[in-house]
Image (cartoon, rainbow, N blue to C red; front, top):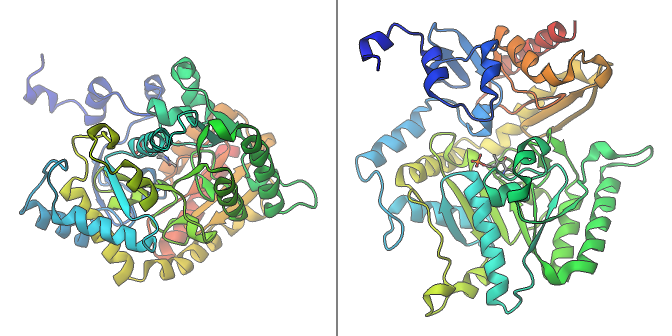
Length: 448
Ligand SMILES: *Cc1c(COP(=O)(O)O)cnc(C)c1O
């Protein structure tokens, strides 16, 4: 056992590699890939121990909306901290959770007026899946218990959420633990054939879903989708027409629609909820990541009056008996309320129109580069794919690109051959230009 004074002689990153098992990481890769110790952040910038600045182009795993160490959110959390840090939400309530639920309900026009809380995104997905399943039992249709998900979809990595996730690398080792699901084609607009547009791809994918519904609807509880952008699935983007068609099919065949807006919600696609692009509401809508501005773990699943009512009874077991210790944490809710306040007071959705134009201009070079294809953008997400022929070592490309970008002072994490940026909503025009130019320089080094 080393004493603390000894430990202080050892670099923090080495101590981390000894004691911390890092997420989504082959730890051995860190023999060559240095770990970065971040000691502070300000706005879109992260600073390491030596004071080097890194531009956070991916909002720290898609969570940060208004910059690191945002004075307004800091203040909201501090002022809540003086009142109550946490209290259990079974049998108790508190002002931040009530206000947040009311505000979120209002943002859906009251269509999704009941908010159930958890802490991480995967748990919010589990909640929606369990509620749907339980609803059909209460509705005397116990056979409706299978879920439909999309090819290339991602909904988190706990066992229930992983079962409806179609990203091979996350599933492979755990296949035998996962329930059976139906997987249908993604409406990914990159699949458009000659003469087809994104709507055609959407209609084709919806027709396949309809076939499945027609045959199996008696055993299907719900279909789960990421509206407009399959983020972990290499930022695959698709037409809102698909959402309208799926909503129609779910109504016709009595199947729940779960919209997982954990990554695309909170203004990311240009509207507060991505579903608003299609003018539809799902039966369940999950949020996490951006909802607390990237400050504290908070997730939730919103649902309709109809579903809420089905659980309302004198019988305990007819209730939704699901809980997490930190459900509806007051500090996290205070951070979320502060974010909603910023959305309103700073006209964020309106200003993001200009910000996404800035992003487009900053990455205009990639549109005309012959080594790049499928340049695409949806609000504050911009992505493009490096063609296979240009990659020397496709398996190592994400890490090589990550390392090269760090040297240019930007934080990006490519997924496969897809480079994307998903910055916080406080980026200045200058910072956007810097981002585009730095990523371009890094790419030139990697492809050289
Ligand atoms: C990140 C993500 C999740 C899982 O959230 P965690 O907080 O990482 O568990 C679920 N669905 C989507 C669409 C996500 O992007």
